Amino acid sequence: MSGNAKEQILDFVRARYPQAEIDETQDIFALGFVNSLFAMELVMFIEKTFEVTIPNDELKIDNFRSANTMAELVDRLSPARV
Amino acid sequence: MTTQAEIAPGVLQVTDRKSARAFVDTHIVPYADAYDRQGRVPEELLERMTAAGLWAPFLPGDSGGGGMDLVTLGEVHEEVGRGCSSVRSLLTVHTMVSWAVQRWGSPAQREQWVPALGRGDVLAAFCLSEPGAGSDASGIASNVVEKNGGWVLNGVKKWITNGQRADLFLVFARTATSIGAFLVPRDTPGVEVTPIEDVLGTRASMIAEISFRDVALGPDALLGPSGFTAGMVLTGTLDLGRYSVATGSVGIIQAALEACAAYASRRTVGGSLLKDLPLIQAKLSDMVTDARAARLLVAEAGRLKDAGEASTIMATWVAKYFASTAAARHASEAVQIHGANGCSHDYPVARLYRDAKVMEIIEGSNEIQRITIASQAEREII
Ligand SMILES: Cc1cc2nc3c(=O)[nH]c(=O)nc-3n(C[C@H](O)[C@H](O)[C@H](O)COP(=O)(O)OP(=O)(O)OC[C@H]3O[C@@H](n4cnc5c(N)ncnc54)[C@H](O)[C@@H]3O)c2cc1C
Image 1 (cartoon, rainbow over the protein chains, first blue to last red):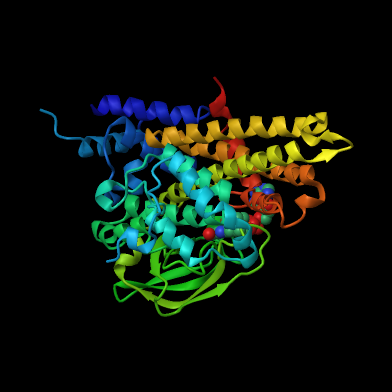
Image 2: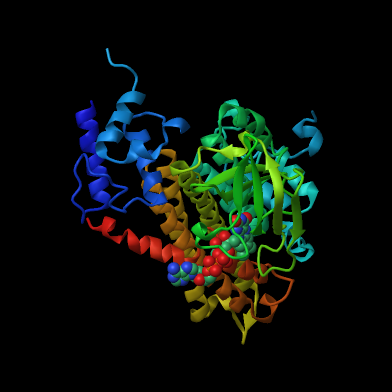
């Protein structure tokens, strides 16, 4: 799940910023890309793609720094797999 | 509690474009010029809007709304905008705040505010702009400090639509670390409302300057955590407002078109009806084409919102840019087609002209729209 989530998140970020080299550990905030428009898009993308609702207490900057941390967030919010 | 039927007997529920059109033609169109001159929307119409369920019909059913999808909401706001941009402006800011509380509020905040906002028992205003900061939201000077577990708010907000009448203000202010959104009831001590009269357009939208002096707020005043999310509360709320203004701009083009089509079919010049003159036909054809194009752009933005697609945000910028600039252009041509009559109170086009100009300034001015759209241009490479 999270490997796949990571790839999808990376694809989304790279599509928005094709000029940048971004890997799964890259801090996208440190690259200076994230404005409030992109932050909102990221949240909408994650909620829609992975069918989760991100509660207010998970809307912390550290959860959105990299594809890795976003994939971990998705894992936490997804219903437990059987 | 009084029922809707008791508030305004005979007013039908607005559930779609058709019922909105009927409501607007009955209760708004005949009076819009009078509202414009009086500089306010009367309480009677606000009550009728409550009875019609117009204030926030998109709220989920369990929150007292009708769960209306955003494409339909856009059509309803277009119809209201066709009738009167001031009334549509009141709806826009109420929609923004209602959505923000529903989307970002804690369960307690939602319980306290959402049903009342949904019914229209509480009317809301959106307070971002200040005397010294408009386009650049990061330049706001209003601030809050934490005190006794709550907050103390100081600052001045300007150009606040429905500020004269609203019961609840969503106020953006600096916190120690970023910008936060705060719910401030109008009757909180230290809140002072000063009407701003005689503006160019949307003259009946009851604009005000609002001062907050040492306003003590409880811990539950903060909407969403401050920090990373605060930017999103603002972005998401402005996105919906921008969508509503885009729909309202389509309404202005439609109103200009309807006024001009009627006028050009009656008025003769040198023995010819205006509608038979090629230069007038060119203006009418552009109005028809732009009304359709703008409506489609808005509908696409609405469809993407309903689908939860992130691309709705840029689609909304594009729709608002196209619709507002087209509205300003066509409202100007509408005055032109009406000649001197267009400059008088006898026809609605002078009001449309003034209102349309405002659409190019609010919810992201033309310049900011172009900057934002251009900054994302590489996304359009296919
Ligand atoms: C009728 C009306 C109702 C309103 N209602 C509300 C409300 O309910 N709530 C609220 O918070 N605010 C409201 N506003 C304020 C509105 O949001 C602001 O007017 C708007 O954001 C523009 O800000 P400003 O007027 O301070 O212009 P400024 O930010 O001072 O800009 C001045 C001019 O410079 C241009 N400009 C700015 N930045 C750039 C740039 N980087 N490059 C090129 N040009 C640039 C702008 O487009 C504009 O043309 C309302 C305004 C009006 C007129």
